Image (tube, rainbow, N blue to C red):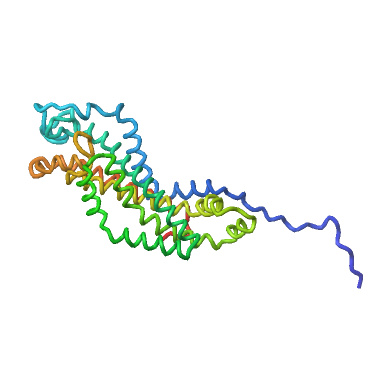
Length: 306
């Protein structure tokens, strides 16, 4: 039997064409556009941020201007409402919508500042404990345990009553009290990352510990930090509202949402909108921040979502 050589014109096997690889940014954008909670949270937070930044342009009145002759005007949806004051006025005749808009600046400032201060403290402690372990981990664990033994609200009330309530005091007290979650999360995440091959390669290359922590560890635990930061930001906003409600937080005449609730509590049975409006604003902002943080976690680490 004669075996003929294969013809050069024989059909070659078809090449497999793979779809183009997507960049991490494109994948994150695709996940974000399909994540309902992330879109709702981003929309709420984005709207509040824009409202706070454009407060001088969108506020219809001066939030500090008083007119006792126009006190406690109900919102526009009430029978006695006024178009001039869409959300009514408070007990001193100040426009409620304007104070609500300017109050968003106070809430965002306190939330961001407290999360930043506590994030720096907690991240530094957690990364050091997770990377070095041993005695460093034991010392940091003892510090975290000591902090967890102190109730945040009681300590904040005590500090505010001793030093005096003000915007700066509230930011510092909350920033120095809300770092424990950052420390716990970053410690656990660092312990997982430090055993990876790229960290071992950086050590073999002779990189200093500071460089390894800054360039290898922190970028790989950033998604966990973002989630914790959003949670602590919402926590700080609620704590500020509680302190202001008790008279130990932001002081008048600043338009804090918690202070607006405190000023309207004596009218809550006859004009319930004076506490309902700022209370609903707090609820929506905190809900939006939590949805945004949960969405960021799902987008940046989809393999660990539940």
